[in-house]
Image 1 (cartoon, rainbow, N blue to C red):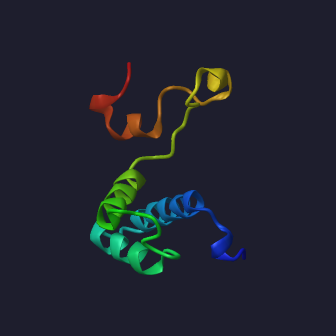
Image 2 (cartoon, rainbow, N blue to C red; image 1 turned 30 degrees about the horizontal axis):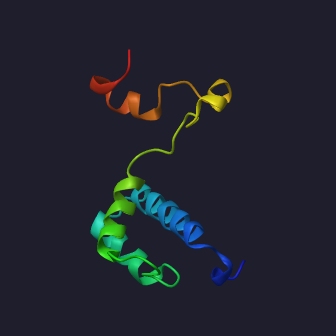
Length: 96
């Protein structure tokens, strides 16, 4: 495994998000996930001016599925349909 010091801050934040998604999928509550990230994320709090806010945003962001479509128009043709996993979970908000 690569030395965590070789990972960029953005790479570590991506790792934090992945870990938060995994822990949420295992039924862990948000406060426990925040504690796990605080204690286990390499070099935490790194450059974060508001570490508690970072943890809240990371766990909140992990509650949403990964984007299923391209962000820019150049990749729209190669992307997934506009309907996402969220559409089936929240039928009242589903796009027509």
